Length: 171
Image 1: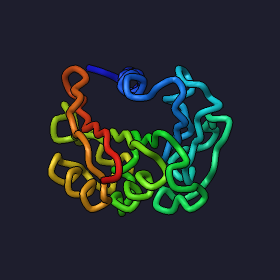
Image 2: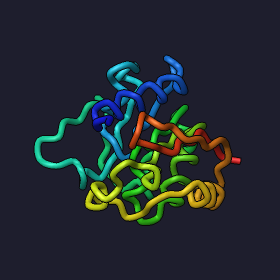
Image 3: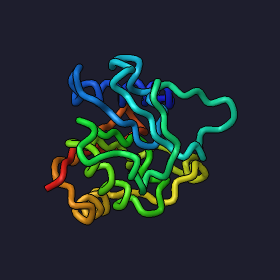
Image 4: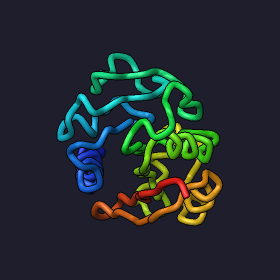
């Protein structure tokens, strides 16, 4: 059985395979934690409303902006090479709006979201603040609604942990 720390490490490996050393990255819904361990921190911007961070949570990216993931008006079109949305969309009431904004501010968007129907113990995660549970069809529908296209896959981290991954861009 894999713990969440192991899952974070494997998610970081997936991201590292998709992000080049010179890419500017915005971590939407995050503090940059998965990125700054292996990517140039000066190229990472964190962006979150901080509602799920809890007391004493550390901001990892040197540049951090507090705001609503569905309104990224603080950023220009294509300001970043890559937008990262890891374990975020399941917490967002209107995920297609957040996806559209991510596609506007970055040339590419990397997404991970739980595939809880394949988890070993999904009931344990029902209290984690998830407002939506994704299937492949729902993720594809929301990506189309956001005007994004690309590839969707499934990462399975041993027994009990499955996540959808998507690498998309504006059509």
